[in-house]
Image (cartoon, rainbow, N blue to C red; front, top):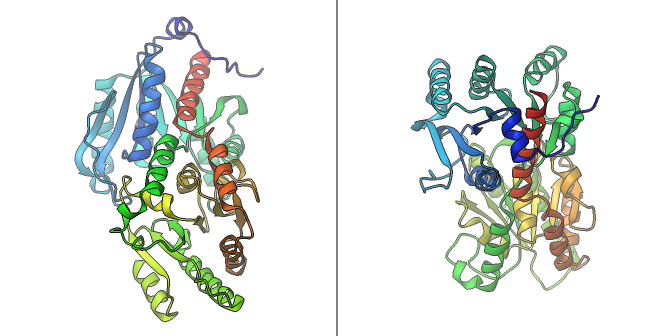
Length: 408
C-alpha cells in the first residue's frame, strides 16, 4: 500500500498527533539555512505550529561565515553558543543535544544528515523519546566509493526516519536504494533565497562603479566567475589549467579584443598550490578575490558574464543556484548533483566532464565569442531556478511532516 502524502488540514494535524514544536537541525547556521528557516517558520506559523531552529555550535572549521546574531522571527536555540564544532567532544555534544531537546520538547525533528556526531545525537534522542524524525539529505550514490557493509549500516539508520527531504532526483534515487519508499521522500532541500540574488545582482548591474573597490572588479572588462572552497574536489587547479588553454585558444583567433578574465572567490587549504600554478604558468587575467560574505557575493554574480563550477565531486552545488538566480549562464561539471534538476543543455548553460579541461576550455571560448546568446541563457536560468526557492524547502518540510504524522 502506498503512503498517503496529501497535506494535512490544521485540525487533522493536531488531532492525529499533538506535534507541538517542530525543530529543524543543522550543525551551524549559515545564510542559506537562515533563509530556509524563515520560509518554514512563515508556513508553519500560518498553521498554528511552532518552529525552532536547532543549531549545534556558533563556529566550525569548514566555513568562514560571520556569526549571524540578528533577531529572528522564530526561536533559535544554539546548543553550544560561541563554541567551535570541532572542539566539542562527542560525549559533551550528545549530552548538550539531549539537554537542549529535553528543554525544547519537539514532537518532530528534521535532522541534517545521518552520518555525523550531531545527527546521531539528535536521532538517538528522537528514538529514545519516541519522537518523529525527518531526514534532510543531499547524498547521492556516486559521492564516494561504496562498500556493502557501510551501505547495510546506512540502511539501518535510514530506517529510523519517518520521511525525508532530499535535494533532487539523484538524491531521491539513493535514498530509495537505501530502502526508503518513494512516497516518503520529498524534494527541496538545497535551495537559496532566489529573490535576494535576483534583487542584489540586478542592483550591482545598475551601479557597477560602486563595486570598483572590490578585488577583481576594478574595471569593466568581462570575466568568468567561480566560487568554491579551495580543496581538491572543487577542482580549481583543473579550472586554472582550462583557463590557460582558453587563453591560448583565444590568442589563436587573432582578435584585437582581450580574452575574458577569471575571478575566483573562496579560500582554503589549496590556496598556495593555486598561487604556485598561476606563477608557474605565468597566467595573466586571474584574480583570487578571497572569501566574501553574502552581502558581497551578488555583486560578483551581477557583474560576471558566465559562472563555472568545475567540481570533481559535488553533492549538489548551491553556488549554481546562486548564479542562476542572479541571471547567469552556467558551465557545470557533470558530477554535480544539481545537474539533472537545474541544467538544460544549451538553454541555461552546458555541462562538461571535470577531468576533460580541453572540453571546458572550448566551452569557455564558445561562451566568450558571441556564439551563444548569453542574455537569453541568463533569462532561462532565472526561469528554471524559479521553482527552487525557499518556499520549496518549506513545502517539502510540511509534506514530509504530514506524511510522517499519518504513519504515526
